[in-house]
Length: 124
Image (tube, rainbow, N blue to C red):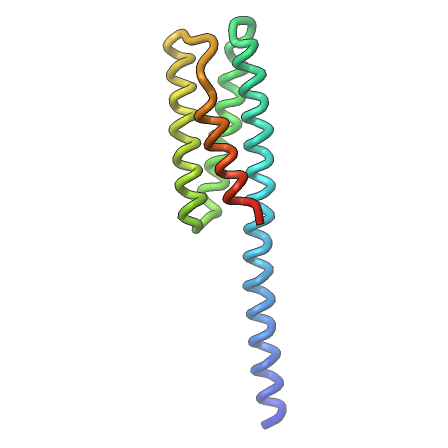
């Protein structure tokens, strides 16, 4: 009986630790991706400032954000984070459309605000 109780307790502890580590890993992934997004948004800001000289630079920054958002969206089950990712996707699409329509200095405030929201949601 004692061995059975010990075995069940050990199994329960292993499941708890494994589940806990999974949650921690997801949180760390979220924070790392949020930081990468913040860096890409910073690059986008710099690129927009130089859009007249190098319009492809803004497109690369937008593509980087898109890639990171895909990674983040695929790894989350958090509704707040999913909404923040959707908001950032929309903001990126707006900037991309503005650039395609000839706006060399598009408003990126929506991108910045949405990226900050992702940072808030990902903060442990």
